[in-house]
Length: 594
Image (cartoon, rainbow, N blue to C red; front, top):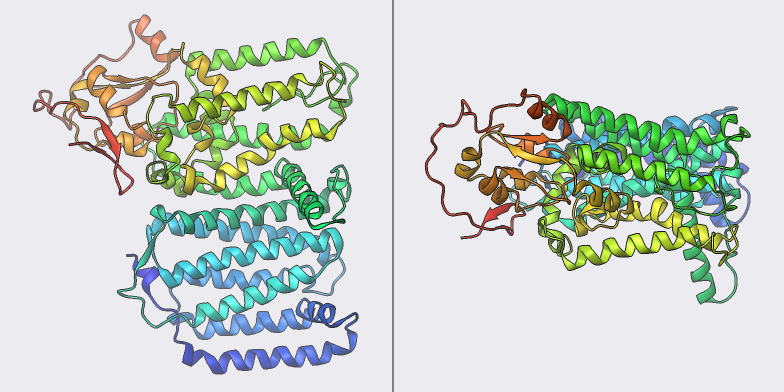
């Protein structure tokens, strides 16, 4: 257990006078403000809790408590507590200055996202976290999600209730953190890599916060037109009607926000900050280049082109105006007039995807060009590979075999999306009918968020492991006829290996990898997405990715010699035991079956 996580911040008894004096200052501020409150009791309370006087007093009291308790605080909790105070100070109602309400939300958003990065990296460095600290961190992320929701509702409607509730949550959480027990030694900690419920709540709160923050920043940037195109239904009528309309509105809100510029930027900053540390741990230059290409592809193809380029005059060019929208939908149509040139665009896209998949395998799509690559990689997220083996659903998709579940889900995704894309051309639905566009947005704007937060219950990289990704499924079909595979530099090394580190590190849980490497010296599977974690995890540096580049080198006589001896392993290793199948153990790691 990490010593930072197990140290106690401060005892509750020594904190009481400080807390009481802080709230006394707050009360004085409220008394001075009371003559300016309007509306009913609830409205007055909300105005008071979000007023400059109350927020200023709260921030002063919080900072005072942190300073007094600084030497007793666990180092891991100091930064989060300071962020709690800065969040209240950056609220748009905290400072009565012209322009503050407009521009403060941008630093507020990035401070919150920065804290998320800190917490995720803290989890990466501390596989086991003391229960009180884990509860505090989870509560903090939830409180910041409430702050984000309050910011969005205030931006959209001027409503202060959610923001006021978040002020109470943030302030109360600091009091809780300062009153943690003096010692947590002996108490059971949270092994978050095997605690699906804790990790699920962490991911859900982070994504919810970034959705609300993104929506608030998008409204500030693009104005009310950001959500003006969304066909929200009125929340009126009977209970069932209201519930149905609310679900419909929520789906549209998630779909519209999840493909918006600021949400994608915030998500990219958060997930990208987890990818950058991997550059310092990777041993192979090829892997570093792939990560750099992945981040660049996310910025260009995931953020700039769909969210910003579409607002430039370029798309109003007469030569381009009749082209349908192509992109990560693989050319699937969401509406509009029939265009003959559409088929040329689809052919070009399919030819490009097919060629890349044949030459370089699925890694060209699933590990570089797709925006999900940066979501499902990085330091902390990569550690969630354990859920591929411990979750009930994740175990249904283990190995290279196309299970019944994989066949059903991949077929469902392909058939349903193709059907949606064909409907406009057969005139079954009006091209402007929102019912036609919503399924498309659900797949490409909402489903991937659901799959990300469901990692603890479905497994990591579940867009690929379950076959729900239409993009990846098509790439998989092409890659089966391609050059891509994982090869061993020395097959005898794999035959004598007993660690199975390659299978343990695989983000898509191809647990039969060691058996193929032992038997043939190479591993080839249409489900392999070429992330390369197996290459980095191999303790003997015995694996490499083989694609068209290596095929050409071999044809030209410049390839590496097969079965070359490695300096760290004897050229004549002991005879290996008979190959045995690999299964997922209860601890979440691949182990041989006796």
